[in-house]
Structure formats: structure tokens, C-alpha cells
Length: 257
Ligand SMILES: [Zn+2]
Image (cartoon, rainbow, N blue to C red; front, side, top):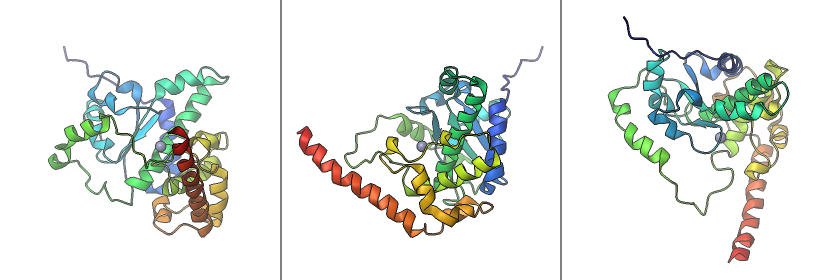
């Protein structure tokens, strides 16, 4: 009897999220998209990539996840990959009404948040997906990468609450949020987290307003827009947020002493 291969049923939320992201981000044209549910990684070595949060992206995640994706028969070559904590999101969604819809909406929001990271760090900008297949050289540093990804980080005194979620991320997220809200009017754009209290920044709506007419370039690849300088009002808003945070921080440090 043939040994049964493990199977991974692609869930409805993955199909919906990938279709929506492809519809709004021409940047993904020609690239595989791997929206990997955390539930598929439990018990595997790569589950250690998941720290705090409900979604994770790194430009090398496609390579890191390749063994798992290959085992499931889903590896199609290099592309955008992120991990989404479907377990935590499902648990949270079950506390509200219309749980199934809420779950799917949140998963799309998290996938879009991770894609905003991808647009800033890997797609079209850094050209990291140039090679269609990961080669041996790329796979060699995997062990070191896994180690660095899981090693406890030293607290950085210069670290800001928006680390990794600054101006380029806010800009990518704004484009994705608006495009997705127009593409799927049943989806609540607040599911794509960016800006606001959590990051000690102005609300996302203020950044959207500062981007102005740029947001209407809805058919352009987002990475192409990111490659051009942002509108001065957008830059000024981020600089104000940054300056306000830095003005307050020394006072806090003195009080703590
Ligand atoms: Zn993030």
C-alpha cells in the first residue's frame, strides 16, 4: 500500500485573501503567494519563527518555509510568503457575532499588513525574488537565519514603538487599505493595522489624507509608487510624530531614574 502523503487543504480564507491581494497589488503578478496558516506549522521546526503578534513576514520566509510547502505540494518557486496565526484569530473571532466572516476579514487584514511589509522589503524594491528557484547558496544560511530570528533581542534604547512600521510601511499600507476597501466593500479597512496609538503615531486616516491624490493611482504597482518621493504633507506628518515622540521620551527616562 502506498504511504499516504500529508495533505493541506487550502482554506477559504486563504483563497479569498490571495485573490483580493492579487486584485489590488499588481506587484504580485507572476509571483507565487504563500499565506501560510500557523496551524500548519505547529510541531515543525519553523513554528519558532512565530513570536509575538498574529502575522509575520521576512523576505526569506519563502525559502525558510520551502520544506513545509514542498511537503504539502504547494511550492511553486520564490515568492511572497507570510505566516498568519489562524489559531489566535479564530479564537478571537469566536467571541463576536458572525464569527466566520470576522475570521476571514481579520485574516485578510493581517495578510495585507504582511504584504505591506513585503512591498517595502522584498517585492520590486530589493529585487530579492529575482531567482525563480532558491539555490544551495540561499539555503545554506538558513540555520543562521533561524537562530537569529529566534534569539532574544537586546532591548534597544533607540527603538521606537513603530519600528518596522514607519513611513514606507504606512504608505504601502494606506494604498493597500484603500484598494481593498474598494475591491471588497464588505471588508472593514480597520482590519489592516497601521499607525495609531499602538505605534505612537497619528491615526491611519491622517496619513491617508496626507497622501492626497497619490492614493488615486490605484492601478499602479505599489512598489513603483513607493520608489518615488512621498508627498511633502505625508513626510511632514511623520516627522511631526517622530519629533513628538522624541520630545516626550527624555522626560520619561528622567522620571524613571
Ligand atoms: Zn507588522
